[in-house]
Image (cartoon, rainbow, N blue to C red; front, top):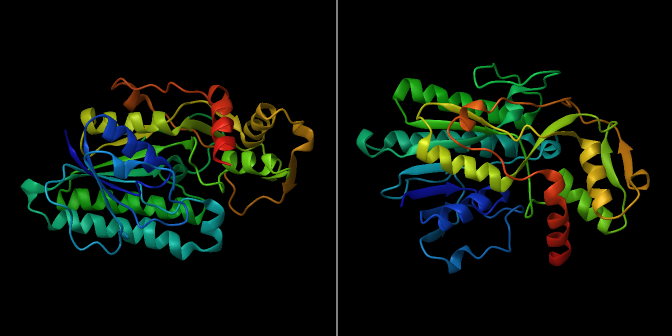
Length: 308
């Protein structure tokens, strides 16, 4: 059993990780300020070895005693919101990471937890072909990815200068039940179930890799066990679909005519055409995704209807 401090564990991906960690017998201290995107359908308080600390990671003054790992999911993550209100993204994604790093640095060198930061494939920017490796340069295209890239650079600087034990995990586009309906699949299901056309930026041909959040968290937990401190790991399904392809899959699952389900709107500023990352490092440790988007969508729709 490990003692884990998880930040943002009431959010989408963080909640999948907390659930998995508790099921594996770990102790979890969940630091989450419970923003608009926090899930309200979780049963963590009824389970053993769980504690919730309601706090902003920027305001923390000390770390819990005896923590083995800090797994940092806490972040503002919606690109459209970052364009409209980038100060919130700087606050959480940069200042929050800085504060956590300083709290780790303040600990005695023999008592420092490993700081595991959950980043994103978007820090690499767009690529027309091939897949980025962990050694490729960062080239963010919007305020969200820029703040995530800035956090990555802070972590590497604190590692080299102060010797902090760190690990960076750059995951591709996650999906799954519990995602706040500002993201594509959840919003598409919500709109179509309510008789509205889903809005699609541009012509919808920009491409993403689609990774089930449960598979992503299996990879992260494996990295806590087998990953090397100081390393960066990409996590990806290598399952690639354009935005319009994924949205059409949702419409088909709902039994709707895709040609009548969408409204196309102007592209957002700084739109990346394609993300793709090479995840051979984490696969070499024994991880592989188990879920595909087509397999999961019927269950996703069922759970969404059940909640509604």
